Image (cartoon, rainbow, N blue to C red; front, side, top):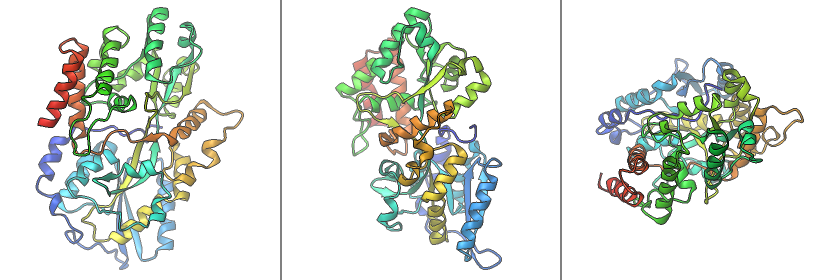
Length: 431
């Protein structure tokens, strides 16, 4: 499904610094003008990301039900194009005109949480309500031990593999770990001349390599935010990707092209494994039906830690809201068990509440299950190990840039692995 995919982070951090260096720390619940509807009811302005028109009926019904149960509250829904959300919310927060409830993701929201932009929720939400959400997913919307967001819907990627390519290479099973991936990469290259995998090392693109380090047992930063990856585990992870590249077991374009190139290569039958969301199988069916007929889903690749990554969408409440109680009531309504389950079924995503995730929709497959249904079940099943793997740092993209640049230097032979890791750690700590 095109409208609901893993969050694609945008490079607007210069704008972030410019707009927020002075404004957000001064925001308080009294800084915006009072919002009242013409009927005298409190008005809650709710922003989502590119969910119209596909889910217009769903949200209209949701809002109607909420307003019927809460006649003293009116909800005004504003749907923002995906590519515009970050710049629009930055501008609105800085100007004191932010909405009351905003659909973001923990990564970007954490950057603003570090600037005191969001309402702190720990004293606002009872423990019994918090406990309805998956614990690791709730933790994703915390910074410095303080909760700034409420989890909403999730996506957890699976490994989609070309069974024909694996068969040509004499492999009965797809790789399930990075160690097995390295072995399969050599086998596939020797037998077919093709690559097993594409993962980008472009600093501004996917965070998949960063996540792989965590899955391999690397701690990226310590409790003080200092580099923690200059360790045997960190050097082994750098060595892993360096060896694959230098042994010609990764396409050369991994240094210059992004995740989109990986999709193209898989759909052309040039790579054997693709990391993507279950719904992407539908796209492969449209773009490359021959490859789709050979495509099977398996569990997400992982490392020694056994961790699986998950992408989280959450709801946050700006501190500048003049309707904090109404905003929180609506945010909890949107994300309760029943509404999460209904939306997850409609959008083919995963819910973030324990009861909704246990629904047979995610656990019981029909005899004639489609490839997408099978992949969705695999994705839901790995949620017990899934978590947001990257630490909630306001400058996480800078850490990614430093690590990727030094990894590239090692892969190109400009530095040895030990020096690349040490330089990356020093650069992060000295920034």
